[in-house]
Length: 126
Image (spheres, rainbow, N blue to C red):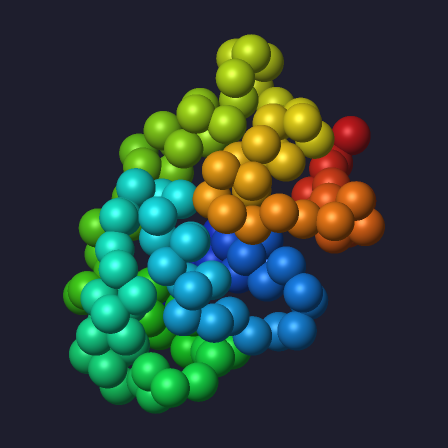
């Protein structure tokens, strides 16, 4: 049984254009974010091993299938916590807009102000 909520939030976070699909590059960025430094070719191999088509973007259900496959099981809660702590520069337990923008820029994903506002609106609970 897969706990769906964390996967949904992760998928939505990396679906920056809100298309409902993730590219191989989006998946690579996601895995890099969680401590899995993989190449584009490695992501394509993982897609093939999970029985998915490496030549097209994946939807949410396919993303979950990939991320719960044997190839991707190395993504752990401790890796997620380490990444969160990396983003939370001031140790406040929150990730500020500036910290989030810095992370996206570091990963090579420059976001427009509108895209950043959409991300913040989607995930800011207070």
